[in-house]
Image 1 (cartoon, rainbow, N blue to C red):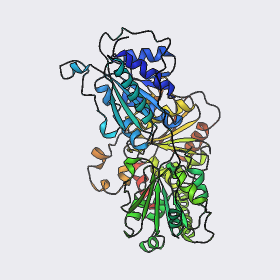
Image 2: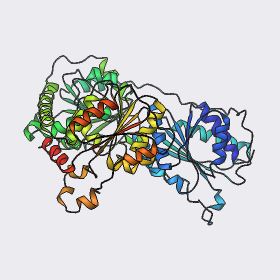
Image 3: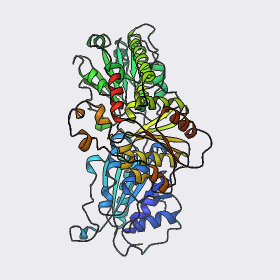
Image 4: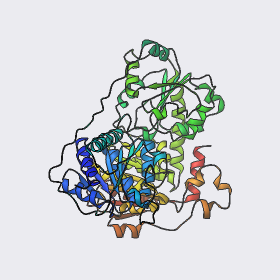
Length: 556
């Protein structure tokens, strides 16, 4: 076996033993030896996706569902760079990806050779760690490659999940390949996890506070902390604020805190100020939640829980006082062992404002014409309770926050970096891996930007796409500022008159359309019926200006 192909054999052996079963490949020449050997090994499901940017998000969506590492394999040159948006999202959302980039030999870098760029550590600003595996010449070098490839694969999951990069130089002749019928089992190195316990001092400190605000960021629907949060939500001295992407749906948990806080006076906000803030999970969407906590007196402490060293000093709310190295489920389990307080009215104060907010929301929905507000209320009304929902950026993920959702519904969104690139591809990859009904709600800009997500043969027949088409980036009419300038329509909102009908025709996706209340009801009933023979897209046309007016009424 040639010196550089030996690295491929080590990769195949260790990836398989570490439980990696899916490899998303982007077709090319420099990575062809790895593609061929991976396929011939019979140990992986090889998924070819031509567009590298879409391939990256497709793999991300698969890893979201599988909750284990998915590998990506690219050819050299700028093809590598097209994985960057998905890698950045995986980094901030803590999704395990193993990115393998084929490269030219080092002696060809900067020598005018085709498809050659600087690939070493090319993702360093948004990768957990990068590895460069040079050709093997000695037994000691082989042992070294086994060690670092073990480390690379393990680091995709431990201590926290995330993307890892392996750069793999391959020299010509590329197609002088060894037999791969019997893969040698190189030894694996296993990571062993422990459990965190807390002394009585910390628990007593927690119990001494009577107005605790627990803010939960983005969580996977199967996160082990969720049952503990359900129990904690019954503590009358604690109010839990979550978001749709937190996947915590309980009668006492406030999901629409952004809307609730926007409708409070300064006096009312003061009346629900906490004396302790506790946070964990991924990013928070709500600007009003951030603003509310940031404006609290600096003397109010903020406890941050997590096991990611890169987040130990993440001070989102400008109040960080303690950071605990612990899984949140371990922390809450230690607290719950002492029992919940029987007295307290902090949660009751929040719930009073929650009822008032929901009343206003329902009144405005009842009064609404055929606008985004009405449309989203009907989508969630007709959607099955057990649906997997992907929310694209920027508007869908915000509208979903307004509504209470049944416990069985599961939400995902690319809120690590919050970009519109790849939202559709992520949902396509998730639906392929899950083999169950998946619905993505996506705006027109995000859909058209990522339409290559449908340019592959792996689009699940159980995928629903709900496309809200208001002819531009309507988010810029909603957020404060851009609507005050004449440049909004042409240069910021990017107004257009495209629709998805011909795209659906080309990609063999069934097309439905709605532009009024009756056609919307009929289309949603059709989409969520049990009789399906392929992927389906429902395009809903809404008026941009009136959408913004309705949205502002909610926040007045």
